[in-house]
Image (tube, rainbow over all chains, first blue to last red; front, side, top):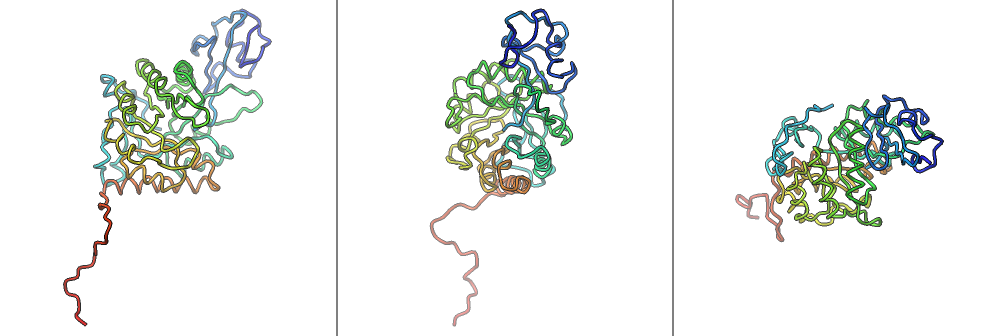
Length: 67
Length: 286
């Protein structure tokens, strides 16, 4: 099962990071967004090509107010 | 918006050495009294945190009132339900982003968060926070130093939130941090500067800018930081959680400028007994 931001996600293995972002209504050119898979940064340039394994832990992060 | 040009890095120990960081001799005119951190020039010596504001509108007003050019942001999970426009607000304000690693308890998490922030915000700046205790939010010194070293080696401009320990501050500067950000007192406590002597010692201990971070409660705390020789002050909760955040932002701006001027002007020594400022010569004999 692929875990997206701490929750089991309805994402199939072999889908790309970009496909996951689309489920969050995020376009590939979304500003202020970063993605980590299994504790590693996935650069924006790889979002379209990076394929997720079936136990991938995906974190999709963005700017939030903070000190 | 400041120049995003990345300076050619010198050997680590001197990376980000501040021109004019010797606060003992600040220039008199505000225009020529800019602060330089790793090649970035800041006319304002007030950094603003964005956390805790009642709304994005008030945040925008407070940024304008503070005249700050560098503001912190955090990195958190995307919440599809609430698509705020923080990035748009900050972009509109024309400020540069200083991503933080707030909430990280290990060097590993802080380094990864910094790398994600670099991807998200296209900046090599990072306010490095590695927390060691959840009640006091005090930094974890060994983890902080390890993370700082790793991020400097990876090309980041590292501004570490640190304790008021002059030795740790020097170690952070030695590994190539572009500035040090000692706490005055615990984050959000509003207790001001609990150990002013240590803050003054830190100013002597390092060649990089010293930014007083955490603990500021009101304007006089910010003025004191500058009088002690700090090169800048970072205020967050003191502004965002004030009854009138916009007015407090203006107060902080004035306090930082006043403290900076006073530091440059050179205060009189403290004495136990009075010294008359009016001459006794020429007194009438009644």
